[in-house]
Image (tube, protein in one colour):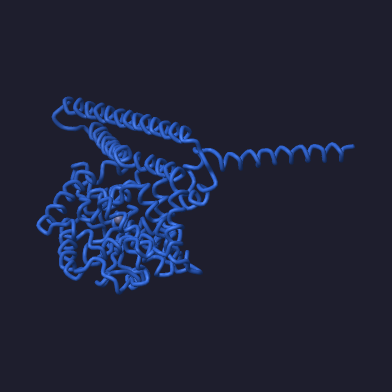
Length: 459
Ligand SMILES: [Zn+2]
């Protein structure tokens, strides 16, 4: 009897589980709200199999826009509340100053605590501001792009298939992928080397450049990947890799082949194909001479000077000395947020061109060109908008970019055994984290020692 009850119970439980499972999988495929949270790579497989009435899509879009608006209000309220707290603390400081002409020991303690609280609040305030001015739109632009993809990708995919069948695939712009290395993209790259060198000097002299990671093995690893991509690209100048010790998830290239990769970016990449994807994209900017075309020689100094001023305010809160300690840690605000975009050759058409060419270079180097998309996606879906904000400030626009990248992937002749990952990547990544950690400790120690007074936030 007991056995019977148990087995009945068990089968009921199984029925329940099955129902839940069926229910869950139906939801998984059917609702727009689950679909806009799916990775792009998965979404592109799903879209041809689903069909939504236009009204449902439009309603969903309106809801997303509403959600974005209320999220914006929430962040603004948070910002206002923080500002109020700062004002209150400043009033307390004012009161303290009116008490007497010099501090007693107790007053000095109170003053230090107030200084520390104000500095900490101001820092939080700046992060909040970045969230709401850059990060918020990244999150929603990404969801809207996914929605548009659900609507439009199936038709686009059919068009591409037909175009390939008609024998005209190579007549698309930059369609002659078999001629990479021979074909002419961005003629006159050699002229950019001097421009890049000058920019590099300017960048260094403003003190804006994060410290370089000097480890020979690590540099050789990334340089090796960059050289491989360069050999499979339209680049006619040598690449020089700089590894920067910055938390910021970003990479950028100066005209003439100077490639900067931040530690934060390598730490965030899950596999080698993602890193290669970013390198390929940046080298595509150099190949097509985007930066050089946009950068007017006369304004380089101006761009860096302006960036240095913005950085000084962001990093130090206007208070030298104490701020230096923060600056040396390169917390949230990286180079990407303060550099003028024209320097990096960022504009919508150039981005799409770099996406297309970058896809070709990664593919021709033997890597899975989807790596760039999975990285891009991860950045855009990141919780806590701040860390990814600068990556997208220098790399704007969503839907069109995903479509142009995926179209290119669909056009490329199929290749067996594309590389996704390697043990080398993970070994180097581990080493990088270790090296950066000890370098950071060393810098904080030096920075603390160089301050005449201890930071008010130190015990
Ligand atoms: Zn770009």
